[in-house]
Length: 377
Image 1 (cartoon, helix red, strand yellow):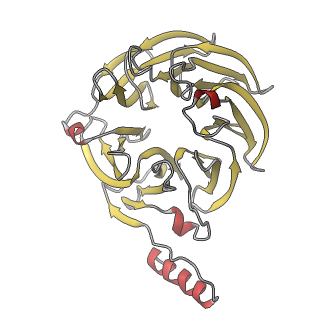
Image 2 (image 1 turned 135 degrees about the vertical axis):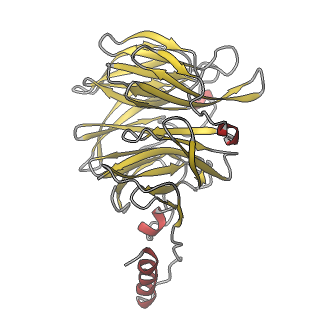
Image 3 (image 1 turned 30 degrees about the vertical axis):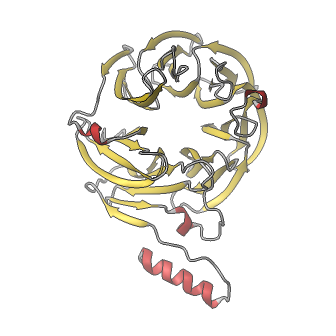
């Protein structure tokens, strides 16, 4: 039975049961690119939606049919009244489940990764990003409400929950406004941003021992930390947004064997991904001196820690991108996916580039396209 017939049958059953329901609009579909058949079935894309608009949505791209489907959550979950919620901040697949961190709705939405049907949720205030190790999920939380008033800012924490029970069993205090976490060698590293403490940003990475689930150390790095990725050499890459004035955005490298800062690269990072020895980064970096955004598309060799490209888009189509916001590299094909948030209010775009940096196809997304998660067969 095709998607449209399933939709019609579902509505007919609801009417026959004498219940009044809001009609569910089937996802919009577009054919984009060429069909691909390998170990990756497709990918999900989480659209943040502008804060306060309750417009976070989920899209899906199917490699076998080269079909891009927009806003699939409502059809899969017609009885969830507010759908995904307000501000989709992070998206990961782990153990056959899809985890969507919905920041201003204060929850982690847990879905079946194959069907997108809702399994449950975990309530965490002002939740930000998620990572996993063994049976547990680890979620960073700003703890307090969304507020740029430093007097209201609270020490953040990491919430740990069992992925089977979906129940929080412990929390660990870290720094102010913790953002991305990463697990390396039995330790959890958390980038503390201090984003609500302007101009007194936090500048540390918390190190948490996963066995005792206690913070054992803080590594001083730079102001306003954000993104975190581990490479295959035991190095942790951490981005700093700087202070938008005199302190520029930069990328830093930590040796997780010694937990010491060992290097830095002078590039800005809004989003990053690592494939092999290549770290891909795109950035929309605001500069109060120039009163404008500075856009960039960089590649760093994580083994040599050198910048090997200052623009991986080689065909000039970067001129079409207004606000580069997210990035993901297909580990099997090498294709590079870059999202464009446009004006942060209207629908954005997803661009697929070849490994050589040539535009292959583009498609309209939801508002503020951000995180991509590959679904393996």
